[in-house]
Image (cartoon, rainbow, N blue to C red; front, top):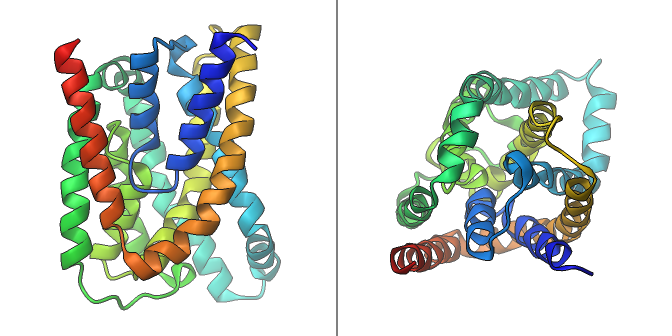
Length: 266
């Protein structure tokens, strides 16, 4: 196994471990790639292996999702849930397509910005974990449509690497009255169309720069990310229900501070 394959496996592990916790998987991947000297064609590796994490969520929630789709023709609640997720997804489609080149060519290439956003996001997460209003939405599948749309706009902040898609949606949902568990679950549901869309669009945009070696690295990272993400998701809901998100706030601050120091000394 050559060095690039080992690095791809390590980055896949980082992706799977961090995608669904509010620490910014993309920020971790880009910083790790920077310090390890890993360069993917068009920064596509870091986006495409997220599909492994999406499939992990699909495998865990397959029964619930099949039930929703089966009941949708006759159940208004099922239709409202589907609409809520699609409405929350819509802002990311519009802004993501319009800003794609700027995000990939500028923001993804600025390690110091990523490290700073990790620290700032960690501080914000610690604050919100303490001051979030008392929850009045305990079921992620029954959030009001206007709440879902607001969460969708908040999710767009995560287009800045280091912010964290799950972090933005979880914090937004909690500030809008969702319980910690409901916030995490809605973040999971919203991740499915968001990450699948990012995967498809990024693959299309970079179709001309991908080669066989790149696809091999992506395949390794994909499999490792899927396996790690399954384990994290099963653990996360129980943990945040009991303990909240402070651990992840401190994690962000420590990793971001270490990255700032490393970049400053380089």
